[in-house]
Length: 114
Length: 109
Image 1 (tube, rainbow over the protein chains, first blue to last red):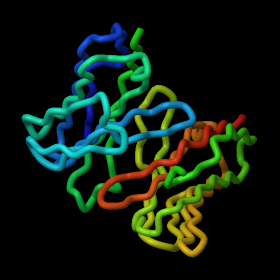
Image 2 (image 1 turned 60 degrees about the vertical axis):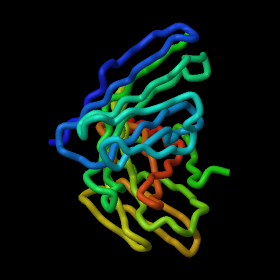
Image 3 (image 1 turned 120 degrees about the vertical axis):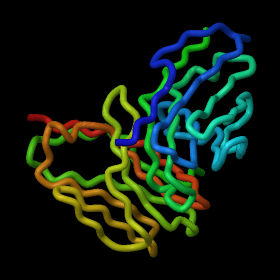
């Protein structure tokens, strides 16, 4: 079974802090994705990566950056957290770019910025 | 306008009922259409996918896509309490997924 793990289930940070969200997948998947999920807005793509050291902006990249130094690990960075970044963050992976329709999600990190 | 629109519900049905969940989309470039299921406090998991128009059946679940009307449907027969979850429809374009907001379904025993 594919397993996607995220470093924290719940996180509380203060405005202005730098926040790191870590995601690890154990099935040698090429593609990794970061989404945020908000009531009434659904899942929105922040960043994605098709390969090590590659990154592409999604629909809402402002205020975020990412890092992919190893194939299995994809990190989301909030450079200076703000209250409007309070959300559920979901990491996902898929085997190849041609199989992007089948994404495997982690359990999510609920981030609260106060 | 979101590329995929979905009625958020919530939807409550008695056990054994047939459930119909629906989405519309605006982008003609979508090739794959997916239904993901998300239980409370969990990440979404792929339930079914369909390529282009047509029907696909898997046990009690049937996914239907009508590209002429840009309509995506999921039917659940003989619904069970364990089907209680949020159902997310999605379209795929350029290897990225575009999700609806999700419909929360409760099946009452």
